[in-house]
Image (cartoon, rainbow, N blue to C red; front, side, top):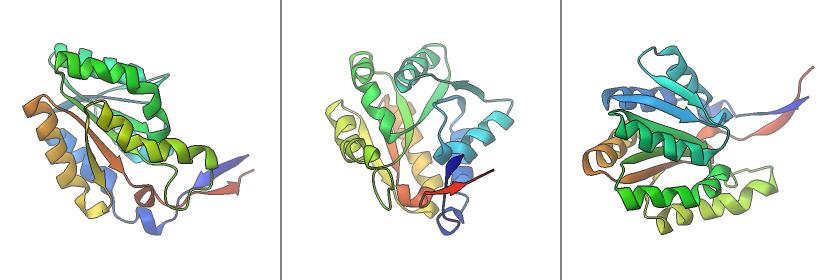
Length: 183
């Protein structure tokens, strides 16, 4: 069985912990996600926290609806996904504009720096534009040292101003993926 393994150098700074701490400070109570290796540390931190309800999704657009429902129920929520899932959300993102729901998503990028899978490239290129044409403000996180501050600023803009916000996490921050054999 083969699986991707990130470079150690790219994951030296614990930026997922910085994002987690910023989300806790912003009173995020729900995190939903489609399983993704790039978000694994943040997902694990969320599962370990009894104050955060986690939901595994079958498809990313379910997360947009879950985040809207959480807001209506009085909770702040976050959707974690990979850039390849953004295309699945296009129609559902119209809900955010029509109803003025706050929305916050963190997107691990694929199809960029040192990508080994050519199938990831087209959606990786289209991700920022897809969000923008649907009225979602896009921030780009390229430096692990900025993760906590950017997560905090994005949460404030989303929840205090009822805005849809996407934070795109550079593929370089996740690390070079390479296939390795396991037995």
